[in-house]
Length: 234
Image (cartoon, rainbow, N blue to C red; front, side, top):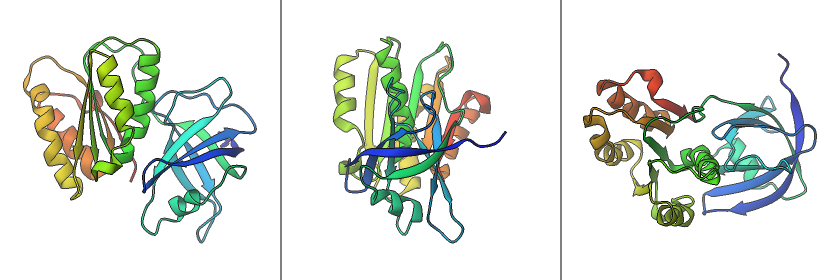
């Protein structure tokens, strides 16, 4: 199937932290219908052989007017993030999609455990907004790991959600020393679920060095690999 590429207009550009930016874009061709957790491919006019393809998940559910909310961090010497960080409202970019299978199942029949490292929280935030927009009432645990306290994304929003939704628990963690420390801090939070006989629904998102060791622990605890949904972005 031919990839359907279309133009999108930047409606707004907002810095969420010193290292993370949000773009709200509006496709100018066909509306893009997507499930929370999916992503679009941006076609950026940079690099030695443009376009440079970069994948970014939607941070908010679909709207009637068709805007897409994209959030990304600044990568040192990164051509893609460097280009996107300088984009301004009114400018256009090319994209295609949606793509991806990191989505919630049609029916959730067990406790939902969401684990994200840094901008891996973006698709999970989209899922949470969809779930609680539909008045979801079953237990959800979110573990969000950031490289610094001031880089905890959506922190106030998630604290408010934990206050207003009795069955939603939010555990923010800070791991300033990289993936290994992030894994070491996260595993004790997961151990009660790994040790109990009743299975949960784990959904893990982040870099491979963060996600894969966590998935391995679930598999060691008796989960099939397919029972552990993952998304990696490196």
